[in-house]
Length: 280
Length: 342
Image (tube, rainbow over all chains, first blue to last red):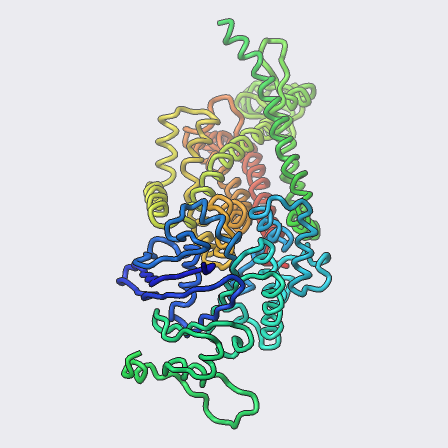
């Protein structure tokens, strides 16, 4: 049985300006310990899919029109509030794009991580030791001294590491990383991705990486789902998709990656009209 | 009759207990705050703020005088008198009517009588010493300010947080209520509530509480709307925290600086409102020393010849001092508590 299975999920937003079809029939599956990358441009529905896993989208305006989300044998869409709260953080944890606003500005990082641990692992006695362990795990030097820092005293990369530590401290089975490196500069991006790779094998958890950047998934993901306009247009192993992309949108996305040392020329842009004409 | 007499006799005990409770509450808040990193940082910043420290001392002085007046002793005639009475009456005696500050005789053109004692700020129509009346009025002002804040701060904060966090129906209902309240001219509303309730300090606090939460609620709602757009609220939900935990642990601390400044500024606003209501004749009950009543009396006094100017001057001066100090203190506290400043 797969850890997570999404079958034909459709999500609509009922706004004053009309109905927005954000996700139109997405199907995915993920085994324990596996890594899936969902790639697509802004507005393709990849973040919405990620948030829908634990029903984090505000309802209303969100409506789950059709489909099923099965996590560990249970239907998420049928869960009650209490079950959802145990699922959130405890089984499925999130890391978001903007580390500078993901942490509450008025609390120390110790407070925030302690809150997560107390919520999902009340059996832990020495909370401080547990926090230090996880801060150390995500590569924060001198974790004991950092405990009483406030978010604004840390750099962007450090803040994102704290967010990852917080997510890991609850021992989730699935980590959803929604554009975790987009707000960071390139060298920090590489460090954070290395960290993810290391942690994934250490903690034996499944990871869903949501990104618009094909460049960072190469050595990271087992499977790739390419999303375009609320649909999955291509789905397969990373090797297949990077090596032999079938869909014109995937091909265009891969061509968009700037390459070091390549001959200087204009980067291609994605021509939506042409894609539409091709029937995407 | 017996029960009424016993209630009257125990009245002084109740007020004393209330004073002790009030100050212990303040002490407890400060004591528990002093263990909190955020308060410690705020204190470090506040300490460097000389104007703020000065304002704090002035507010403390008013609080001290108010407490002196509130602590009651049973007196020989069966009633009770305050600690302030005990401290002052030994030195200050009542005259027959008006006398100018430091004058030697009553303010009476035809038959000037010698005074029994010296009065730094003169005496009023009933011969009471103006200085001691002004000091006694501190209690009225502080009770009105404190009680009203105790009513409107929690109401405004909780409703504002709920409106901003839950939005939709909840927001619509709360907005409807406060827009309706805000559309009625405040003074008219206050006066009509006071006419229904009858005069009294508690009644006045309730009336002011009903009318003053709107501004705070609006402010908190706006800030909550802004804060709940931030990722850390989504992150808190993604961690599985309940609505209650998100509101109390995440949103409240992030709007707390607004609550504090609104409390301090609102406090002075409420004291002014008390003065206005008393001036309009629907405020403090007869016999309660209040700055508003003193200013109200000045209508007749200023038209006399020679003019009786000391009552209004003393009341306005005391009012001005407290309001100014509270405003300065509010500014300093906001600067000290603002999370955006290092």
